Image 1 (tube, rainbow, N blue to C red):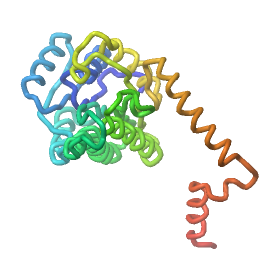
Image 2 (image 1 turned 180 degrees about the vertical axis):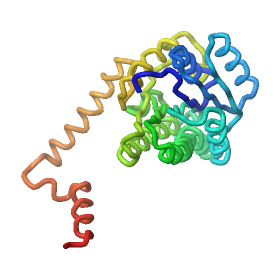
Image 3 (image 1 turned 30 degrees about the horizontal axis):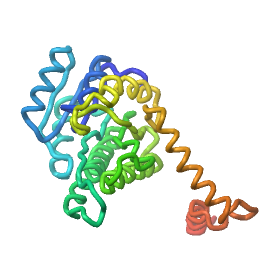
Image 4 (image 1 turned 45 degrees about the vertical axis):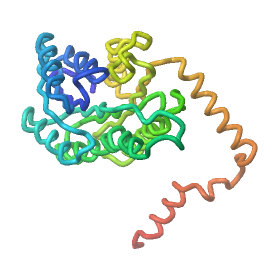
Length: 273
């Protein structure tokens, strides 16, 4: 998606934080923006601010954890602009902090309902309509550095939900038609309402500019905080070490490879001439 001008970009949780920064950045390139979240007053503030920047933007109150609400949001997006070129599943929350045996499981489920099933709902609803639309489109899901390694201590629900988002994105990337691009965005520590609006993190606008370049380039791993590679390498080294010690490569080791097993099963089921 080399040119964002006149592209219709839908952003969940787009009224504040990373979502709003992306709305401004994409809007500056001439994109038409649709934002949705639960707070009507915040949506108005955001759309007014975008209008002041000469960005064409509309908004709708919606809840990503409610499938009917996401369907209505998609209806609104297509009715307003006639198509959707990109969905950014940005909405997310934190919480359920503490040792796992002390966390209220209902709080943990709420984290998953927003951070994972909110993304699931967006992908399910919008991808189906994008397939019917039949034109090049893209879905980007907000993961986190916590998709790659545990960055925040005593946050098992949040970390697990962000690992799940990465798995969902990678599954979709294999399963959707080639004309629908799928990517995962991995923010590090960014100053947003989610992180307490402190100034210790990367400014959201700076992050959005880093992200935009990669989205335009059609990347599927969208990265920012370079020091994360220290933690990614540590995890990868541990994994490689385990395989080298207990499951080293050898001739014929693809016998139990699931991909090859599935290929053989599919081939065996095909009718022969």
